[in-house]
Length: 222
Picture 1 (spheres, helix red, strand yellow):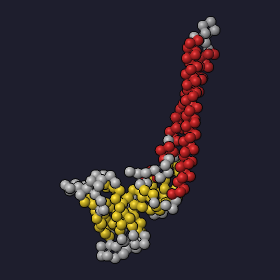
Picture 2 (cartoon, rainbow, N blue to C red):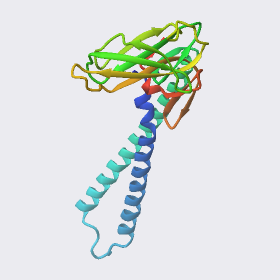
Picture 3 (spheres, rainbow, N blue to C red):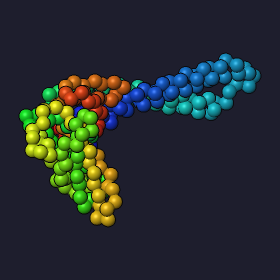
Picture 4 (cartoon, one colour):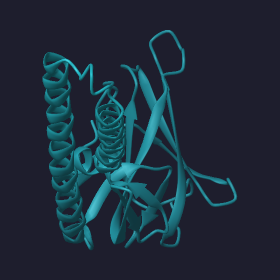
């Protein structure tokens, strides 16, 4: 299950929705006032508006006004939460996060490869490939339980036991159930956060390996 490293993703992403709702309510409020004013100005002096009807319309006006005021306050709160989330995101810079990705960074002869299975499997195999698709190593998975993120460590050796250079490598996760059918799997990779951008209530983390990932997809922060 993905975590919310900022703790405010849901509230922050609600800001545009709250703003749109307030805008619509404001338009309805202004239309209501315009119609009521026109009705009062154009009423027949000999047959004025029924007092009960007038009071009822004033009550409706008050309700709409309160709704506009409430939405205005909620929009302000959402904006404040968005600002807080942006500030909180700064604490992630320099930290290592685990998120969906089919590329791993080999550093100092070691790389962590993660994966999540959609269901239980009988066998899991992970292919480590060079950028051109050349198969370098085949690894056995560390777990076969569905729904959780499993991790293994690649020591940087290829099939011949030779150490490959540090850098970025592709990984492909393949899983089969007891009957030999494919079990869908998602690869996960860990990388340090280099920077973060915050736009329209959504935080995006830019990783040192050149990838970008939505903050809401992060599984773990180290």
